[in-house]
Image (cartoon, rainbow, N blue to C red; front, side, top):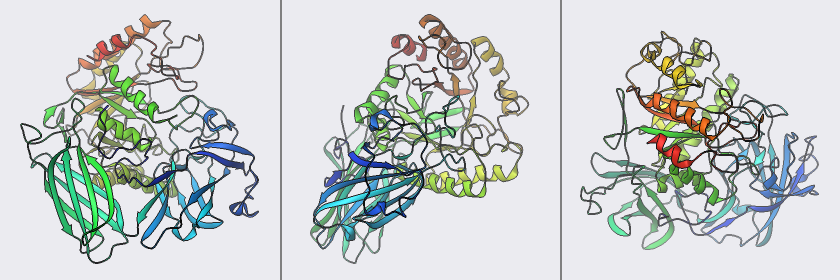
Length: 587
């Protein structure tokens, strides 16, 4: 496997890499705070641990070492780390890749910061709180069963049900520290342009002062491509570089699922001739076009073949057991002949999107749903959508942002104007933040403004699915329901109509198959053996592929999860049927 030049194993932020970092994953002290008295009792200054927990795994998981599924809305973490107090001109930044849901952090008993949200990275400058030698970081995490915040597939009751699984409380992604210069590259946005062989960078410098300049060097496979040095007048930089060259006979290397070509980038922040910050990154040149009944990648027709991936593991829940587990799932997907992954109701560890970039797998990035519509839910959802897109928009593998799924969180969007306006607002927000990707307003049915029209159909047999899809023109005209087994679900909300967008069957199959007879559920009658499983999958897929108006599909799903047994693989990643046969079906 060929990595980017900036790759560091286990490094949690692959799009902006510095070498000087400290991983805080591992054993922490842990305590439940069922009465929510810990802060009043001074836990931030120290507490008696009830358990040792293996961060970043949620306490509900076996991998955490706690493995208790009982609800507790407030939990505490504590661990020591050794640091050198930053010298003048240096800062220490503490990063959390994900902590669900309300987080407060103390360093040596002093409040370092607070954050609300579950799925995005957040950071605190802890320089003024750190002392030389041993230091203590203490974390209070508060969660609940609230459905007025994005929770995705996390259950909101004490038992898992249907396709909702055990909840995730507290730290569930990597915690780490890096040392940076007081002035440093904080973030940047890369916009490659296939039409004129260029890349536009826009970013921000934290701690800016007069006299700084930014040097950018682009290489491909170790060969020089372009370089520029820009004198900075303020804390925002903008720069366009011509990347046409001899790396390819057509002077440009494009990223695709067939050839995941990536350009390496180094940015050096300079004070005169002195280097004060250096970051490594990369970008891929890719374009997606969403034309009438046609989906293009890099100006060529592109048929999308995705697996719906819940991103759960039996012993670690939402958290990948390790980096190798992320790689393995992507390779398994490609081995079966799929070219894309719809990561469902979850914002994955960012290394997942990195490996999609380097291995060549198209990704849909889907917001975890809320399940109640209110003024408060609109506010928190908007904040997390913004944070998620800003964090992940540089990944060339990401083709689409899925804002809502099956009207979850906007349950009356078909006729309710307020909910329609909110769905449109989220579409407009996604396009404003990242105009290069598709934005899908409501995957499955009741679309408002949307770049793709995505339909769900869990017909059990090929004959039934064929009968449903024969009425596709009527479905797109809102004269027939989009999902016959879901009552009153039309392709479009009232007042919206089909305007020639590509159509994707973004959920189908979901075939219930377990060798443990009578266990779990899926869609349709449970199949008895591998032969039945392959026959049903082949029959359904042949019907989809025969409909010329459909530009791609997404099979439910990659693996079994808890009580749900409709994966192509078991929960421990064993194929239920011949992978060669599945690949042939996708061919």
